[in-house]
Figure 1 (tube, rainbow, N blue to C red):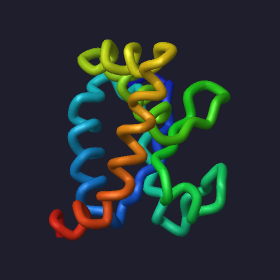
Figure 2: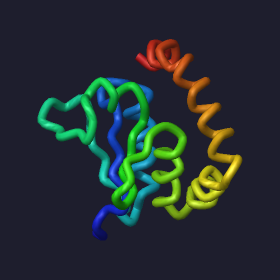
Figure 3: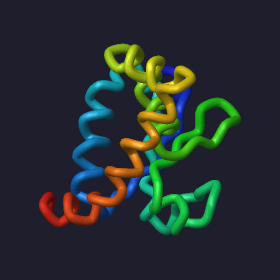
Figure 4: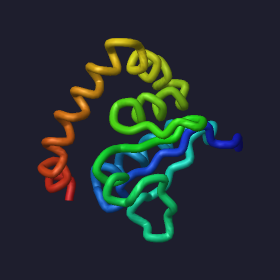
Length: 116
C-alpha cells in the first residue's frame, strides 16, 4: 500500500459521516487517503477538536484545508472522483462548492438525526 497523499479527519460519532467515509474507503483502493476519527480522544488534531468537528478537514501535502477545499483534496486522491476534485479546485468553482458546503452545514444536524 502506498503512503497516503491526503489525511482526512472526520466525525466518527456522526452516522452520516461514517457512512460517507466507509464509501470513500471502498473507493480508495490505492490507499491514498489516511482516515482519522477526530472524535477519538487519542487522535492528534492540527486544530482544537471543536474546530475539527465543526467543518470537514484534510491535509494535502503541507496544506491544511477545510470545507469544500478539503473534500476536493479527498476527491483528487481517488481516481474515479479525481475529475470532480479538479473541477472543485478551479477558480470560481471552489467558491460555488464552498457555498454548497456551507448550506449543507446548516442542514447537517437534521440529516444526522435522520441517519440515526
